[in-house]
Length: 278
Image (cartoon, rainbow, N blue to C red; front, side, top):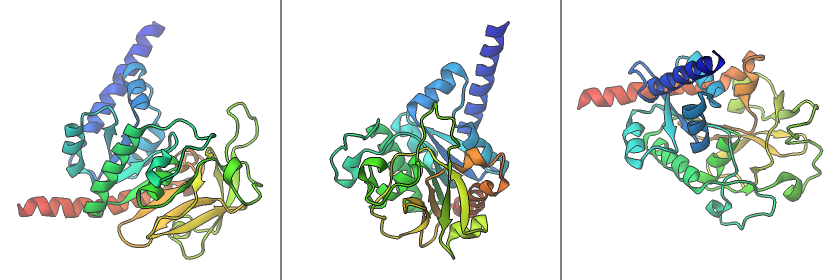
């Protein structure tokens, strides 16, 4: 009976996935990246590690379009024109070759194919003026894609006194949180309505040199960058913390996803108007 239930849950999860791949026209359609291991895990075990992101999009009226690393290039090409926004999730390290540095001895797993996929999606988003939200790795990818660099390992490379624990051991019983200071007048302050916020922390990399066209929107008490935002339209926001994990207990953390979907509605309208003119 237990095996049957497990198999049924897996089938239901896969059915939900395929429904998301071909999102209905009432969108707006938010492209969510699935790294190959996460997509395979969903297919084989019915476990969706991206579920918190999906819930955050769908609860705000958006439709998730799966953009999997396992898809053939032509399939990705076919999906891109229907997107109205992009959500870059957390994940593994970004390869430092993209910003001209050698691999640090503390660099962790990277995946060149995943980097290429996310850069390709960002090429499309940039060309079409689509809104983008980057979370943790996604935040770092945004900075690198637009010309910035990363601290490859905070404990080894941070030049300031590291008074904040930026990532805890999986076995740690300590609370994985720390406060950040949000820049006054920033988009992030507008979204959260405060200049001081306690966030979760799961990272060992961070923004070093800020990409052109961006501003720093938040820092930790030891000056590590916690959020960046584009200075011009469209909406582009990167956050080092994980609002999708905090959102169920603190509604304030819904704000980035709500804004992403709101901005995506504008892009959806423009896309539908352009289609209607053909």
